[in-house]
Image (cartoon, rainbow, N blue to C red; front, side):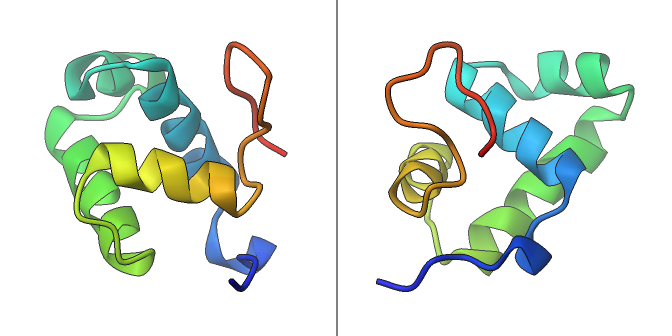
Length: 79
């Protein structure tokens, strides 16, 4: 398994993934990040494609497996 390069993900994407891991809805993420729901949905879709994940849960699991999120820390945090 190859670790993900820091170049593949920016701070805004990390923040979005942390919110997904916490259980935020698209609407709540949009409100917190001051974006439209459609922009958030598009970003999530691009992350799913980039990491070859089929859904949000798999994306969060991928991020834990590749150490983009700290295991054993609640609420989730970026590494």
